[in-house]
Length: 436
Image (tube, rainbow, N blue to C red; front, side, top):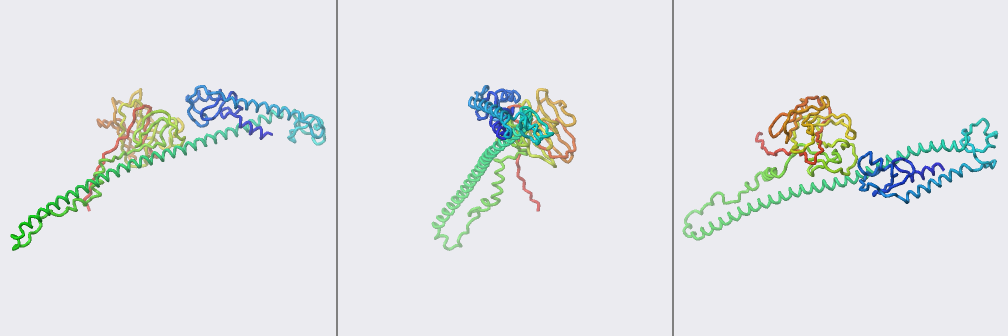
């Protein structure tokens, strides 16, 4: 009976308060909650979303789930009747009402059983008190199971969301790969056509030249019969070396004009759900909250995103900030917790309504004597333990941190502005080493 009561109550239980529904309301995602519990949840979170699946709700006042309310009332009434009947059950030995509970034998007994030899020196308690004790114990066990069930349900929801996100990621990445290769294929096809046209033009010109020479020779055959046949001049054949010499290198060298290299690529798996990345993963801006999986790499409380990390060497990258009015650029240590707002191991330069400031784990925030930054260069020398910042347009030094780095560092961008922060590409060049 206890197990049945437990299972039935779980079916009629609000996942927020862990008790039987009171005035249940229904969301569009099909989940139901006590009206008061849902409102308290929304007030605490400041956003209207389902406590179970996190789906957004457009309803400020969701409709009452009358069917569920009636079922809950019927369940409570049935359980009350069942409890009443259990208290009025008769002893199978003495046909007396079971008004007592033997604590030693853990069973209900009547007043005659209490005086029987089998229960001598046993402890007894009124059955309604014992039932209340067991009901409270059951409530604790029920709550523990409900908490575990809720946690597993949230994990399952996040797993399903993650699986769907992986599909979307794969489809978007595949589409972009195809687009990039389509551009490369188009370039190679056009380059092939240009070179074939050039070859055929040379073939036509030299074939025409030979035809004219042949006709001239035919007209003067008699006059030339007594002389040695004329030799062909230079340059009459196809210049194969011009068309084939270093062909792949020359095409590759020409391709540098259509490709670009960006030293830092942003990782969308680390981006806060309110940040929007460009398709090429080189710029970020603040926007509406997106539905993304709750993975361990992702920032929950920081409006930040990371690039690929470094553990040694020298690295530089330029960030265009322009008119963005709330940003931060720098490096973040691998050990920083991204799900909670705790101490931050960050070295950065940023701008907000209080002006330009630098930040480090030791000095915290410090004001910077800077008038304007449009593009900022970040330069890391891991081995020397130096991280410096310059204003790129004027080549003005902004700030330098000195620190002995001991863990992996990630390029770090943070913004609460809808205007983008952009990692700028570097110029690509081709050099030939002629040394042997």
